[in-house]
Length: 269
Image (spheres, rainbow, N blue to C red):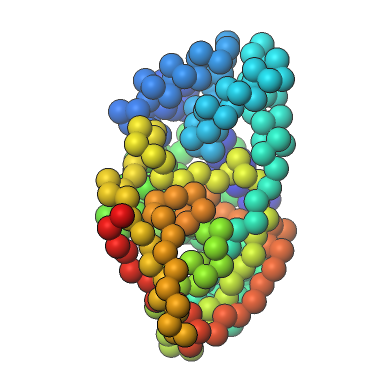
């Protein structure tokens, strides 16, 4: 089983300090201090960006349910259940072979696709002894979350990128993909139902993850003349998931008309 949850757990290092430093860089001390304020052992959860980007919400949940002394992993599981699932969209420009592949393998990040092509399955028994290589990132399994988002902001990805971008708005997903629908490829739109805890985004000022310095509007210009502006960065405009979306999380699939897709641009806000 190619398990995205197992991949997320493998983001953890030998100590919470090493995990937080690796994933969040200079924000690590803030992350650890906040987690430790929740109770004993909660710093073990630093590996989970979906939790780390929701710490205020997590604190309220712990207090409301009296979970300060709970096993941190049990508290995380309860919090995840309380958040439920969200419906989001990912659009991809695919030929017939690409669409068939998704039915079997799900929607892959660059790193997941690279791993599956090489037969690397998580959890991997030899993980602790795996020799890091330049090709697979300095940690041996892909770029840490904060650096991956930084790379996205500067337009660089690569085969070690573990991120998948999703949108709450179907039109946003289509607009982002339409320029790639060339050479016989069609715009395949996937409706996804995924755990909310697995989603994270570029936060507001002070976030532990990198963000665009300037607040912007993402402007959608539709062929019929109407214009829609949505805030960027914002959770409903673009969120990220790690590694892979399982086929069972795909609850709808349509093919969009390229001629009806909006074009997009950015505008100062």
